[in-house]
Image 1 (cartoon, rainbow, N blue to C red):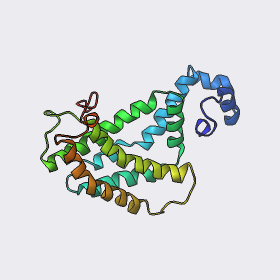
Image 2 (spheres, rainbow, N blue to C red):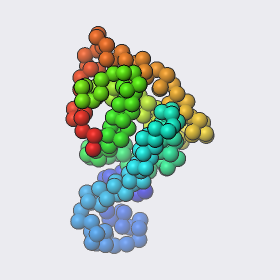
Image 3 (cartoon, one colour):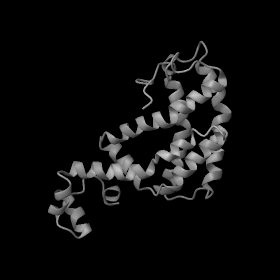
Image 4 (cartoon, helix red, strand yellow):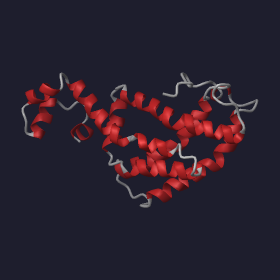
Length: 206
């Protein structure tokens, strides 16, 4: 992907030269460079965050460990580094797309995962208590480990364990083994105030 390699400062003229077409042809389909980049973002991230992956998390016939392992394994097996590079470049350049994708992550992963963990721990549901900052950070600890695995593999190009499913099960198992007690601690008196604040718009689930 041209912009993933060259960065967003690269010109549409350079892109047209790379493609072997006239620059005017690009502007026939996209009124501006920004419109072109938005279209690229949407196409790349549509394939890197397939909604059917999120449905795996809803399959109550499987254990939560199996569902999370399958979800992240499918996600990484579809990752070639292009979407990751675009995401990081967009964040550094101040584009709004990373923020929108984080909202999608909250809706499709964080909210349903914490809801299920609350039920298992007999803690209040979202109607009684919105998602807490500490709960968001708890899930982000798992997600960050997965993202960094991908960064090591696709950005740093260093050796990582080749069996993605085994690595994801290791991450998920370690997370779940500690998450239950950490979650309960967030709901007890004396939890750090900054972690018990509600996440803004936490009740939005779509």
